[in-house]
Image 1: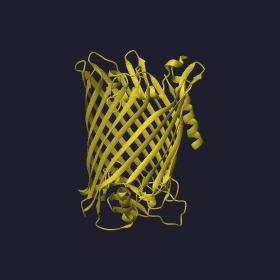
Image 2: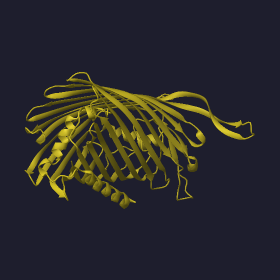
Image 3: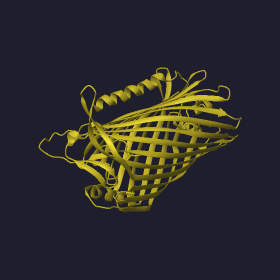
Image 4: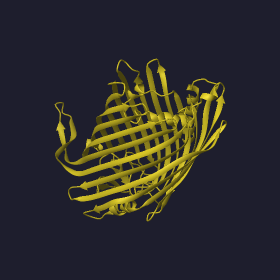
Length: 521
């Protein structure tokens, strides 16, 4: 199976080459430096507004790479594995496909195996309700994830540009040890958008979207027929249902998300500023076997983004600020099964909700900022070094109401990074990048009504994880060089990285990887 997916990635890699524009001019190659500057200057791409691509178009280019990665160590949450080995493939392209039509597309495929994981059989772990599930037996999990994103935009039509974005994500998570589960995930979105040029310097943008997400847990199977396994269905904090009737475990989690964003852009002689505000509403339903509903989850998310760019003949400065706040609550349903006799004499069964009440609330706040300075040249297509600094603050609050349990976690993160070009020749360029990040726990409080097997194996170890002070170091190397394939000139590159997270009380974790890729016009 793995060989089949590797062949598929290589075929897609070859297709990117085939779609590139034929050119023998090696002086106008798309280099990693040129591509990075194009993407840094494009302020609309980090937003959901596809119409902005037609408002501020960039040069045609494509990027495709294939890589492998590894991560292992003691520093991980209790519901995560101690070792991950995987493969990544990414193909991305920006093109002007007609006189007044632009398109950006990205396809990413991830395949990995996570070892010694327990208590978590779901794929979606964030921005979802507390009705998760898992086995207490540690095992290996195979995951495949296909992520396709497309943005289509018109050029200027009077003062307007119009666009639409489409997201299509599907995934498969299989547990390889008894009790054996398989979870399928699908996530689709449609995002129409518009921009309006108020004046030469001022522009407005607006987008709305609908997203549907579904995660399906099918019947659980075992090879060891004589052994009895426990399976846990969580309700929030330390509360759960436990069952040994694995054949009756069947769950669907379906989320409907609606939202919109409003953008404003100011363009000056030497730079630009983008400002975006967004709102989203999540309505998530949970359905078990025979259409029984244990509860639901509803949340609201408020988001903010600001991008600022200033440029002169030698330097490009980039500042990004992101913030989002999410508040949600889950209800638990008390249901009974009733028989319904139809007019034709047939009898069917239905679950009827007797009453429902709020049992769980959560709040999430994330704020981050990063600043990067690029040392470029007068052509504005190259740079020889960059340096940056970043910081982030996150706060996470959970509360189970009846009986009351609480957990409050806050973390502050800071980091610096920089890179320089060690070799700069016509036949090859070598870059070295170094990154140092640190985290400091600000608040780690937990109050539980009772101790049980879940608190002992998950919640208490997780608190030790969040209390740890960390220092992360990472080194990246990249070598790029021009190549020709028949009549097509392009840039090939090889990238590798290695890093380690050190903690004062929770072990460490190593990560590393290597990839090969091509850049085309």
